[in-house]
Amino acid sequence: RHEMRLTDLSPAGCFVDTSMSFPEGTRVTIYAQLGDGEVALPGRVVPIKTGGFGFGIEFVDLDEGSKKQLDDYIQQAGT
Image 1: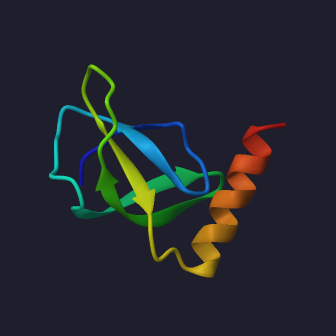
Image 2 (image 1 turned 90 degrees about the horizontal axis):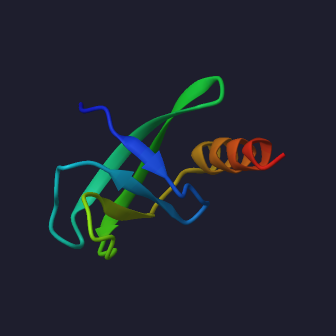
């Protein structure tokens, strides 16, 4: 496991700010501390042109518990 910073978190995906790189389409699982607990966010790497380091993740196959935890966190962060 490596610590990374997530930005632009949404129900559909996020940006991972890191010097690590993965080929487009690579399946990854991000473990994020959201609110009171950790949630597994499986997804695939998508290209994002940032001019810097990092990559986008499109979430795929989120289970209902993870979706709810993610949605609750995003809703609370927006208030």
